[in-house]
Amino acid sequence: MSAAEQEKSRSSGEDKPAASSPSSSSPSTADAPVLPTVNPAVPKTEPPKSTLHPAFYVVSWIFFSSSVILYNKYLLDEKESIFPIILTTWHLAFAAFMTQVLARTTTLLDGRKKVKMTGRVYLRAIVPIGFFFSLSLICGNVAYLYLSVAFIQMLKATTPVAVLICTWSLGMAPPNMRVLFNVSFIVLGVIIASFGEIHFVLIGFLFQIGGIAFEATRLVMVQRLLSSAEYKMDPLVSLYYFAPVCAVMNFVVALFVEIPRCGLADIQKAGLITLLANGMVAFLLNVAVVFLIGKTSSLVLTLCGVLKDILLVTISAMWWKTPVTPLQLFGYTIAIGGLLYYKLGADKMKEYASQANRSWAEYGATNPIRRRLIVVGVSAFVIICLLVQVGGPYDPNSLKGMIPGKTTANNA
Image 1: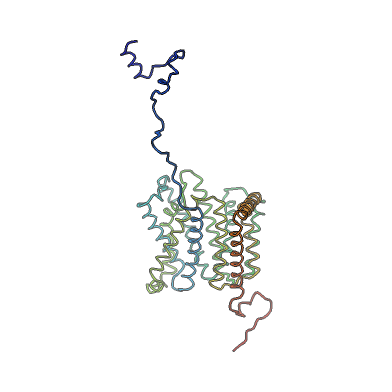
Image 2: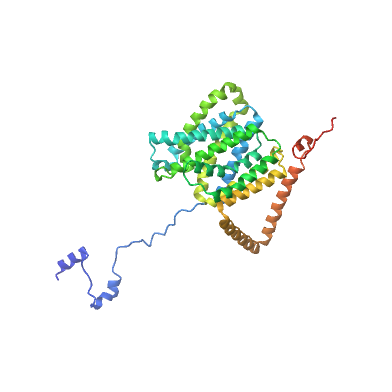
């Protein structure tokens, strides 16, 4: 073969070494240059990892979720100048504005580009869901005018039951008596807690139950909408679509119900900075939800929700001196246990409990002093909470409804 033919053969990649040729195993052949698939000079890059621990997202969500509820209760209970529907309208209008800003300046709302949203879908899906969302927010905020935060959180434990019943009513799942029996413990616990409520106001109770029913309907409708892959949305993208229509609906209701009784002086009394901070906290809650879902699991979400409710009951009882009777605590404990059993199941609860015991034992073996400090600190915190709640200022009228019989106070 001539030199020109050999060069042509090498350039076309057809030069194959003979198997019997001793030169095929020579170092010169083995060290022949090949097309590299990985450049060894470039260091391997690993996918970027989150610099924040998942506990940060858990604490952030609990903080913002609790802050929104306590902040709203403060504005509606202390200021006595902010009306509940107007406050809800402000939250939604602020959220609509902020989602538009984030959509144009960040990548947090890039998920909306995958949603095939049309005018027909918006009118037939988004608007009805927004209608029930608006009603749930209105009823939930009005309930704070009549009920304590602690009692409202106890009533909210029935939300999974309402969602289950709504799912069956709309034909999205066949009724299951076994599941109904499981959630009956939640209902039983809330009923016991309601009987133990001292300051029970029927109109506030009805508003809260109505808010739970509307919220359950909204969740089931969202579940039906999201069952199609074309409309998968995270909470922030959902807020991007729902906030404007809900703000308009709430404004229409407030226009006839509250705005005629509310003046500019009432807004100034509450304070523009206070309202701006309140709207920002409510919006940051939705941002925290997005990160919590993306960085944790459904189990963490369930446990965080239960922990948040317990903290709210404790904080509201201490801050507003809300009396919580032993009967309420007993009923709420049953409701929380039933909620965990319904969401996790007996097998999962046993599995997670055994894992927690092993982890706690291993932590105690490696860090015995820290473990003792944690036990002492938690015990001290629980005892202090009980002493603050039980050992507060004595008011004979607060015992009405707790002890049978007539309670009289000494007249000065």
